[in-house]
Amino acid sequence: MDLSARRRWLLLTVVSAGLLLITLDNSILYAALPTLVEELGANSSEGLWIINAYPVVMAGLLLGSGTLGDRVGHRRMFLIGLAVFGVASLAAAFSPTPETLIASRAFLAVGAAAMMPATLALIRVTFEDERERNVAIAVWGTLAIVGSALGPIISGLLLQSFWWGSVFLVNVPVVIVALVATLVLAPPDDADPTKRWDLPSSLLALVALVGLVMAIKETAKPEPAPLFIGVAVLAAAAGGWAFARRQRRLPYPLLDFAIFRNRAFLAGVLAAGFSMFAVAGVQLITTQRFQLVEGFTPLRAGLLVAAVAVGALPTAMAGGAVLHRVGLLPLVAGGLALSTVGSVLILLNFDTSMGLLVTGLLITGAGLGAAMSVASSAIIGNVPARRAGMASSVEEVSYEFGSLIAVALLGSLMTAVYAATIDLPAGAPDSARDSLDSALALAGGDPSLITAASDAFDGAYFTVMIVVTAVIAAGAIATGLLLRRHGPGSALSAPTHP
Image (cartoon, rainbow, N blue to C red):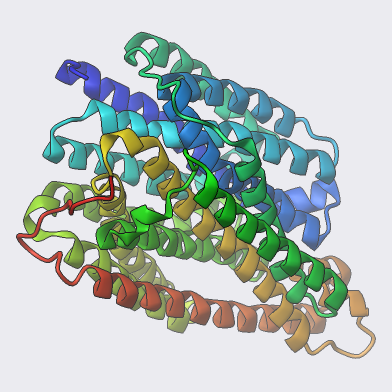
């Protein structure tokens, strides 16, 4: 695909704007969640589902949408995704109930799932020079980080002057501009009608993910229901088994498991998942903690966690530029190791030193920026061009799965630890154990209840940060072992499965 240099980079800008919208909506509710819970009357479970409906549905549909993009053309998929995303944003903005908002977030995910693999596949087929493509993917990956960081900031800014629905309306003008620009700049669709799209496979993947998330959430409750957990685990296991079995039988599977035999590809998938787990986890719990315990405004809390993006930007941009010289190992495994150090700083100083906390956020971001900037290159660079859609889908699933598990696991774990450890003062209502939001609403200015609830929440924050730190460290070790032959001077690509 021979496009002029100017047109190539303009097209990169357009698809990156689409990615920015997708990642923005992953994190834009982190700072807005306390306001949403209060104004819509949502309980803690509904609050988490308002966030989780988006990544759950998206992750379930991504594999199918990537293969569908190979069949009908990635330009067409990007345009369809933009249109759905715009309509769903309007529906979310004017949702009257928590249930309606959850459904609108799921509809948003349908548009995002159509768009997301197309953004990376268009880069893969547009930038034919490897070095140029590495830089383009680094820019793409950097904007993913920027979108995650901008979400809490933008929601904080909007909530200062407008109602909560404005956090979704902000998508609409970007969608309109991107639609027009794509029609002008993107090359004609290179559709391949011989590719098959299998809807049942996408639905099986969705069943497996929903079952997994529901099992995690129920397990973390103070009084979990064993029968519900059993049914959810059974659904997750059955859906995953049926999906894998179906892929082995299909002549054109949504996911060919043979591509995971490539160590660099697998390391890229793991790096993307571990990185987004860290980004989503740190942002979610930190914005909640500083709003509810320290009294930060949504904007101030959003600006605080933006330190992750500030740290990530220089390393993300540098990663793509130097990848061909230093190799994958120091950037992926080394980046995750560096972010582990930053996470330890956050863990030890979140309630004692704002300076050291911000330093920890910056270091965490610097490490994750290096890893994320080249994780996509490791994935896309280690599959044939005809599998760009499949590889893009796997890459996006790894990002979304990391974010999904972070919100489901860490959000539920924080609630569970809080409920189990709060020492309610005499006369305090037992419903104050449900969440810190509930305790603050019930306190009526009672300092003893506020102190008890805040102390329990800080204990929960500390516990969750231990989990985040351990997960990042595990990612550094795993990717280091997989990439031990991909140090300085090594090739990015290895022989791939045909």
